[in-house]
Length: 255
Image (cartoon, rainbow, N blue to C red; front, side, top):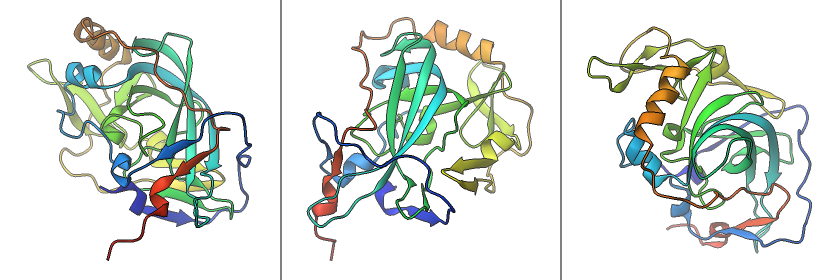
C-alpha cells in the first residue's frame, strides 16, 4: 500500500484549521516514499507483546484536538495536507506517562481549497475518541501507527473494537480475535474539516457479532502481557506549527 498515492478528495464548504505558522524549529522531512509505508505489517495482528516491543509508545488516550496543516512547498511548490491528532494519555505501558499529551502527524486532511483529502486505509479521528494506540515512527511515517489501522483500537461505550468496527473478543483459548462486526456510528461516519465521510464498507469474514470485550478486561490483558517491555525514552510529539517538507515530491515521476 503506497499511502501517498491513494489520496481521494471530497468537497467541503469551509476550510477548518489555520495555515502553517513558521516557528523557530527544525524542518521535518520525509526523504523517501517508502517511509509512508506503515511499520509492523509483518507482525501478528493481535500479538500485543510483539507489537508493543516494536512500537515507540503504547497507551490509552482520548483525542483532545485535531489540527489540519499543509506541508511547506517543495522546490516545485508542491504540498500535501496532513492531520495532527493530539491525545491525552489516560493509561500507558510504554513511551508516555499518564496525563501526558502526544501529537501525531498523518498524511491526509483538509486542503487550502476546502477539500477533505482522505487516504485509503488510514484511520480517521474525531475529538472525544478514545483509543488504544501503538505509536511508531511519529514525524517520519505518513501513518505513525504500528501496522497503520492495526495500531489503533477503538474504545466505544466501554467495549473494544478495531478501526473498522470489528468486535474484539476472547476465543476459547483466551486469545483475542475479531468475533464479528458492529454497525457503529462512531466508526461509520467521521467529519474531516467540514465534510462528513461515510466509511461503511463491505466486510469479509464474520458477520454481525456481539459487542467487543469490556475495556477493563482488555486493559487487564495488556497489563498481564506487557510487564517486561524494554525501557524506552519518551516518544516524540510533533508540533503542528513546525514547518515540514515532504521531500519525495521533489523526485521525478516513475517512467
